[in-house]
Image (cartoon, rainbow, N blue to C red; front, side, top):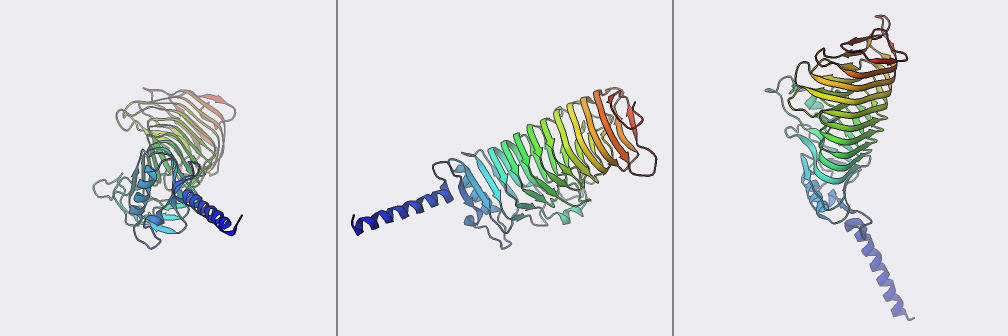
Length: 387
């Protein structure tokens, strides 16, 4: 074989290698590698300018691409205003956050900062951070207390009507309002998710979910100024496991019964979790004498608490049944460690207390329990009062 033929073969091989590299970076290779859409290729830069349009443009192309696609937020710090992206897309789509995305400190209005809507097969991944820079917002007037004079601030991340969703290893930092709101989703998983805001930050629930089914939250670390996880009406088949909560208000179902025509809550399991220094522990919150609803098949088990307060069932028109608290241990800051208060008109049914080993850490006397309008099944140890 002559020199000319060898050079020709060499050029063809080099060209093929270059072609494959381009496919891998931009359009995928025969559907096996995701197409990558780097936001810096769409104008985003670590220069303090708003990158929301660059993200929207990257999303538009990624969503329209055949096969799986990935939007890359690379290492560095980027600033972005409201980001609102919507499917359906032609294939599975992932947002990979390697760096830090920051919201403007003064950002107000809108329901969410990052809004992901109507997507099938969606992933938010990597150990990057979505920083809401909410310190200014926490100093303002709460809209719950004064709706006329408050300034509405966006939730850090909203997931609306996502099917087969995954949030893995990402951090939500210093949200102005709730960190995450999950609505109308099906088959959604949080794995290794981190929420971080200081104690006392206003209205900064970690993960709020409602009107969905088939959600798992596992191996999460949540520290906030409000509920670590709050569970709204219409939630079905929720599994929470290996979550470290604190500071915050605990892991709470409700409030239920506040609005007319709420959907029922069922199939909730909270297990192998640790709550440290939280205002409350594990509880079902309801609104007294408001609207009827049902909450059933709810189970808290293998929970460790350190210096927290009460699991509570409050009086209401919400029908509560098939609820268990099993293997709850640790220390509480109040002498009344277990408080189950049900409605005489709509009594709680099939409530079970098993091995509630809680130690009061204060000076008011031994730990006690209180049961009103309820006769729970009791197995093993429980503070005096409900037997």
